[in-house]
Length: 82
Image (cartoon, rainbow, N blue to C red):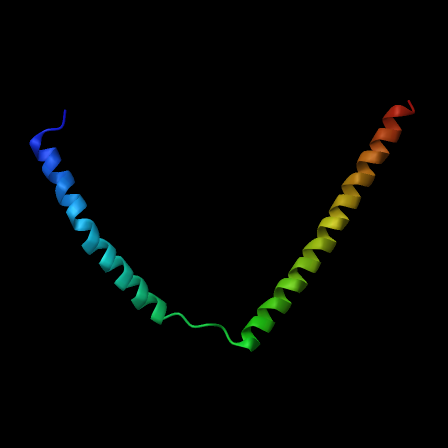
């Protein structure tokens, strides 16, 4: 069973919610005013970097996959013929 002090703390906490929510939304509005959208030039530049990076990683993983796959096939054929 809750004591009187715990009940008072709960009531105080619940009563402070509207003020805390108001403060939170004011802080969000303040921070959102600082946000700027990137320029078209920035978006293009980062998009090109991402596309090139994805392509390079794709080639790298394709090479690694083929190398490991060939090694496994070689070992499988070597071990099954003996």
